[in-house]
Image (tube, rainbow, N blue to C red; front, side):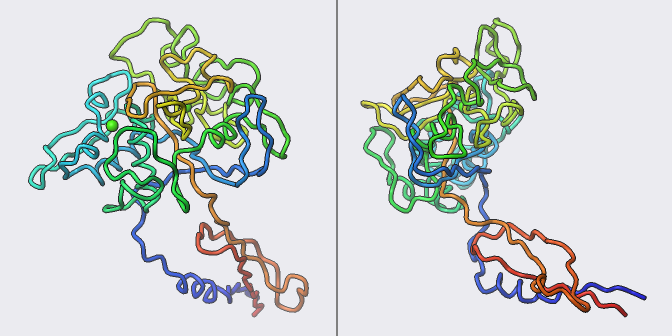
Length: 361
Ligand SMILES: [Ca+2]
Ligand SMILES: [Ca+2]
């Protein structure tokens, strides 16, 4: 006796895929995100953290590797200063955050070529709020060669200073609002009035800075640097840690490094500055990691301790669960076999049912 399992609905499934073909080029960069739900949550006592809509936010800070791909796509052949200055020579010359090297002269004959120095999984630094906004625009527009940096989430059209830029309706990828960033970092989650942690490591106690799986740790200076565990400073030591290196210290929504590594830009306008939060490897005495610390900086400034992460629309249902169509009436040669996850799919939230026929011969 031989048992043969036939997946009789597979043709239907592929037909569903081909009905909605994705004609766009694949994005050159993808950002791993986490969904932040619990919509309509109350604000913290600081006044921040309430968000009415579900959204997604980068699980990690934008990395050197991701930013390098961005540069090679949008700033290889250009004479526009707002594109040339997406890269800073400090990204190459500052050993404590390096970084990204650049060769060439930006012409067709000799394009700029950007290369990762060391581990590309560390966060990008020396990026202004506008550099972050251009990265968000590029992601918003599909992260392809030719995707615009000047429109999309923010209408920039070459701007490199000022604070008169707000997120456009319909944006799909943007710099987090202060409330979004704050909620992802400090909200306890799971309900609409769950309360807030003091630190983004799901703790009310100041984190340590030991790299690895120990709970409640972050890359900030607490008398010693995280990477060296020494108070001595050297320009030639790279003090950044890889995305998620503090693997036991995720936030409540499973973000990493909202405390430390880089301060991160947010969308708040504070006078002539934009908001930054979370502390950093360099100067992040623990008060800067706390929810009560509302930092800010001029949006054109670029520093060794300020990077960013992006937010985006919440992904639609990304998994299609295939189950036996006639599970309720199993009889004869129809048998339950398994659930098969064929995700991700981004164009539908429908559930497809798969008929699995086991034929006994
Ligand atoms: Ca720049
Ligand atoms: Ca950070």
